Amino acid sequence: MPISKFLDPKNDIAFRRIFGSEKNKDILIHFINDILELKGTDIIKEVTFLSTIQDPEIASKKQSIVDVLCKNEDGTQIIVEMQVSPQEGFEKRAQYYAAKAYSRQLNKGKEEGARYVDLKAVIFIAIIDNIIFKDKVFYKSDHIILDRYSYAHDLKDFSFTFIELPKFKITDISLLTNLVEKWCYFFKHADETSEADLRKMIGSDAVIERAYEELNQYNWTELELLTYDQEIKRVMDNRAVEDYKNKQFKQEMIAAEARAIEAEARAIEAEARGEARGEARGEARGEARGEARSIIF
Image 1 (cartoon, rainbow, N blue to C red):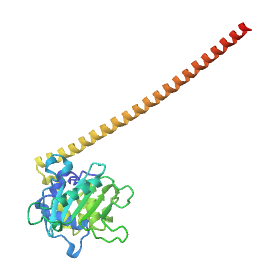
Image 2: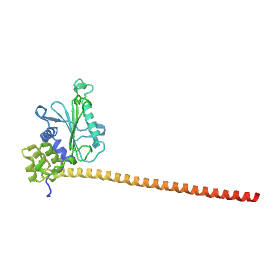
Image 3: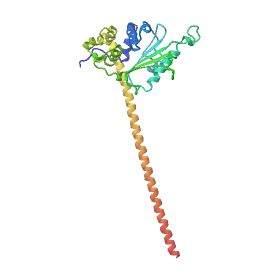
Image 4: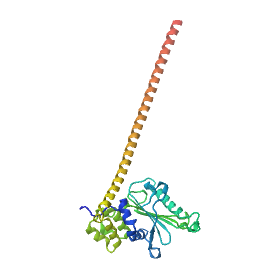
């Protein structure tokens, strides 16, 4: 397969270039409407970008910063997160981010926006390059809060949509039947897509074509490409550190198990020696008593 001119949208730098900039706001709006499958009056027409820093005190840490945070016309806040590296408890992280976005809406000490009734809904969308729901087969899952018995949707302020890319198996462009599938293909295969494949895929979807054009490396400056490559290095370095830690942990576990087996073997051997000495002493005492009796009698 020839090398594609398109970069990888899963790269943080590329992702934020496409979905986190004013210039490409219409791409973000299109993406949100498509992934949430919004229709009619529910369709989002405008968004406003908000600060992505969830906790100023720990802003230097990646886990305190979401990739994209915006709000729509009615104030609903939407988080869009790209997660490449496997992370234990990512679904809890998603709920934490949503809760932070929800609680930060209250304007404490001010008249406007200081009441609970002023709180707006939060939508969390995650594109994940690994599997977090091992029991689910489908690549896209939508989560809301329902009454356990009636299934009534009374608590409407939180919803979560996860796209697990490893579960998306379509590789033939001709088999893509809807916009959700096209976006999933975009995230999973953009950096392998040829110009001819792109022409087949986009059809009348001009916004997806624009998303691809934002990934065209020939539209990037040398400095932008350097930043992109540095992000790749950062991810690879983090994986190398994790791999090293896992390897060290496994080696320590093997060594600890070997020490435990050796200690158990020594204990068994010591016990066996003790029993042998006890038997020998018993036999010696028996012989001594026997000789003493023969002398007496």
